[in-house]
Image (tube, rainbow, N blue to C red; front, side, top):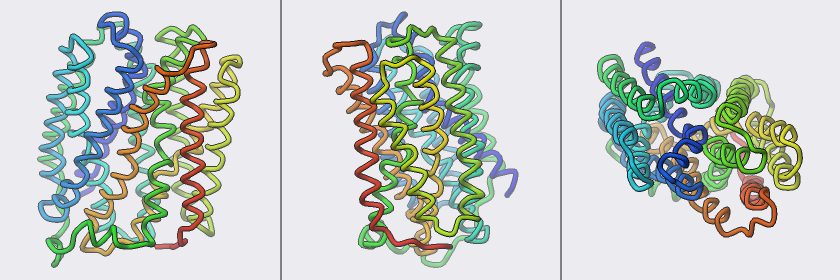
Length: 389
């Protein structure tokens, strides 16, 4: 079981890599293929929307089939998407490839969480979830400066083709090594409607929609065009800044795990962390045209404080019946991931529609969108009921 979990975590490293690597690839894709920032935002959105759309069937498959086949077979689809990306000649192929990669990455984190919920003590779930997310976020780190080095040394097509081979190997490892938990009686009973009819779950679901979208959107794409257009950064410099933000997100995940065990209130922990992220987002909006170091500091702080995703998910999981574990964690994940895809498409249009009075103006509008969405989610989350495992 532990070796199987390790294979799933390695797959999640790839998931984090793929959702963020467009930020570093954006200069070379724009230069060689003529793809615009708005088209790249849309392609990033396709990854998240495909990922989110798969959560509904994946929840049922985890309960009924188990995590081994669910994750291994879909990860193979992701490998095919990476092959297509490596051969892309325009924005359309990149969007389709990103959607296929999103399908492949969709089950791996929830498969791990499903095993944690079924095989480990309930009180350990938040810590294990945060630890998994922290280790997986190393993929976010790998998609920064190391990716820049690889693209510089081998070219972007060869680099992505190599990633496709690694993805296929991980899919095979999951099929061989993962062991499914024992099936529960009644695992075929119930539905998402049973969960959606629970009023206690809804404020947490709303918080899920805003707790991860800002840092995923900024690190996954906007950090690249922003520093290139506003501050004249080259690909290696963008890679370095992306690396720093990725490390801040890793540190945040490692911090939230122990805090979930030590903090007297899970709800209060989420509120304080996301309020701090909100301050950073408003700071990015207000200081969008300031010297680059100001933006770097605010992005690092946002990455750290915005890493509350596993704790919000752990809060929601406490309301989910045991026989609906798979559908429960994937429903929460759906509300966490789908808004990112929608936000990337919306922010792409906001960026394109904003009058570029200054180079920073379109990006200030993007930062403001993320700040206002976070503020609304926090207000709704105040209505939630605090609950421990």
